[in-house]
Image: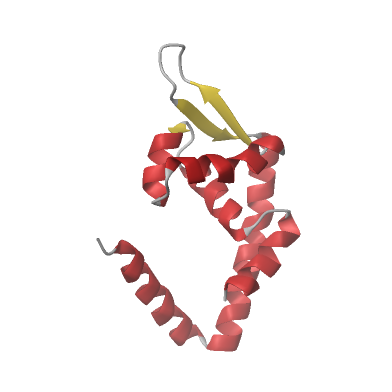
Length: 121
């Protein structure tokens, strides 16, 4: 299933994981790396590595909040917003292909089960 989404989203120049990060930052402009790591259930060092290509490609801005703290606020650049828009279209195409092949009802049940699984503590 991940290959299906990767195939579609890669047409926008990002991986599925990068798309998820762009979407999360877009939902919460100014989110700190620590907050994003918590929200994504990722180790901070893993998040830093995942963000490097997005920063290198100037899709994500990282601005130190103030000199007295190491906290960095994240936001999407204009290019990041454009890429997110394109990737969102591709993601929806992947969703449609998945539903066409798997069946709408079964796809919905699977998404519900996966959401429940990721919400477990």
